[in-house]
Length: 334
Image (cartoon, rainbow, N blue to C red; front, side, top):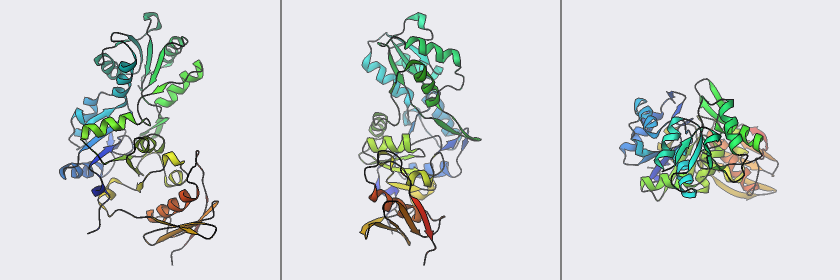
């Protein structure tokens, strides 16, 4: 029997939005796959940039969706942000809260004092997503950050959040508003920074974890930065086209359509040098590139064809600092 993709790893570090659920609803098939992974003895830790809910609330939501989970199995950017503040500030320091009550709670648990106004003389600002945030809260953060000695921590900078109706603005858009007003940039605590993934791996007792995510700029970049294997799942933000064009830091080790493919044989991509460029093969699909175009022999609906295209294109552009997209030419498979 061929080795399954999952068999290569001893733990799963999974994103939530766009992988397990979109808004309040589970992504079809995801709960069943995650239960099966756990039933096989593989620990699953959920790594989320959503700082608007407590880990207990997240765990309860997962359990309601059919994925029995405890708060200890959720690693949030709110926790990462509070830990970062605690490392840099004395206990009892006042911190301006631009975010939810759940974020305030973890800041308080870290030994700091959350406040809501500049007049209370905070020495730091922590900014996390809260759908109820308005202009007044963003302005309060901007006033406070006029003092260059005030530390600014953002739980995450996701520009969008997958919802049942589509993509909605994420915390990154709110952080960008404050950055535009102040001319400052925050320290980012959650994804795509590596510590949140390493913390999750430690909780799982894992030496060979795999990171599952739908976003290249947070999940895949962060997992790569932590030195872990990464899998891009096509149920959320990024697409086959954006994955193919990805910069080097955001290229996943594997691409799957759904989580169910974790139980399928691991797809192998063979890359070789070819006249004037590179060639790659995955399954029955092949791809050739001259560094500008990619000629693919296979079906647009076959993931192996895209995997071959990625193998060839990435070999031709191993050190891409920014996304670079090829011209695609498709040929029917022989």
